[in-house]
Image (cartoon, rainbow, N blue to C red; front, top):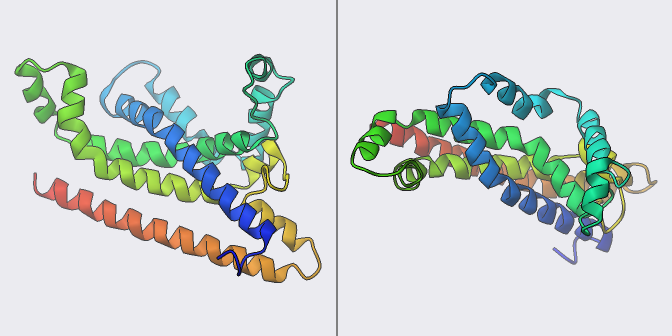
Length: 231
C-alpha cells in the first residue's frame, strides 16, 4: 500500500481512518442512549429530539459545517471556552472527527433504534418483575439482543464518516496532514493537472472500504432479521 500510494495520498487515507474511527467511537455511547430514549420513552419533546438527531440528513453538509464553526470556532463562546482548556476543534483533525460524527450520527441512531424496537418489551418487563433494576435489565437483556444492530450502525456510521466532505471542509478546511481526508484529497487532486492518477487510487480505496462496510452491514442486518424471526 505504501508503495502504491504517494505520501500525500497515504496521509489522506490514514487520516480518514483515524477520523472515522474516533467519530464512531465517540458516537456509540450517545447513540445507544438517544436510540433507547426515542424507542422506549414517551415525553413532550420526543419528536423535537427526533428532528434534531436527523437534521444533518436533510441540511446541506456545508450548512452543518458552518453551524459547527459558529459553535466550536475559537471565536465562538463555547469554542473559546473549550480552547482555554486546550480543546480546539476548528481547523484541527479533531474537528474533522466531530464533523464526521455529527453527519454519521443519524445512521447510527436509526440502526440501533430499529433494533431496540424489535426487542419485545415483555422480556424487559419480566426481568424487572424479578427485581432487576432498569440499568441491569438493559445490560443483561436488551444490550445482548441489540448488539448486532449496534455493530451494523457503527459500520454504516464509519462508512459515512469516511466519505464526509462538505461539513468537514467548511469546519476544518483542507490542511495537508491535519484535516485533508480522502474526499478532500480527491477534491484537491482534481484541481491539479495530472492529478487523475491520485484521484483514481483514492476513489478505488474509498470504494473498497465502502463496499466492505455495506457487505458487513448487510450481513449483520440479516443476522438481526433471523434473531427477530426466531422470537
